[in-house]
Amino acid sequence: MTTVSIPLKQHLNDYLDEQVKLGKASSKADLIRRAIIKYKEDDFVATINTARQEIKDGNILAGDLDELAAGFE
Image 1 (cartoon, one colour):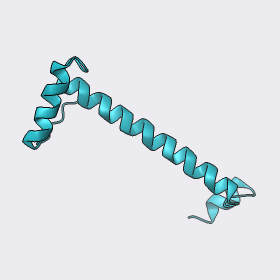
Image 2 (image 1 turned 30 degrees about the vertical axis):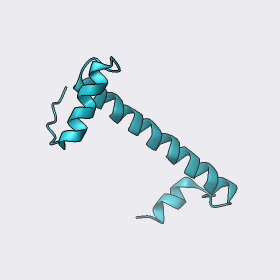
Image 3 (image 1 turned 60 degrees about the vertical axis):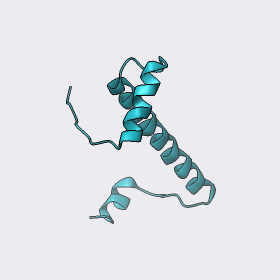
């Protein structure tokens, strides 16, 4: 596991402390870890939704994948 140190404004640190006191997380690190996981999941869902919309709009790649890939080299 890697440790990351980040500076926080006081109001954000206070919020983390409050959430831990309320029992919403076991520690500030746990809360931040869960926030990052949620952000990653939301980003993944947004990517899928964008792809679905592109398919609906007809903006899809068609043809041989090797030929398509060659066009990007």
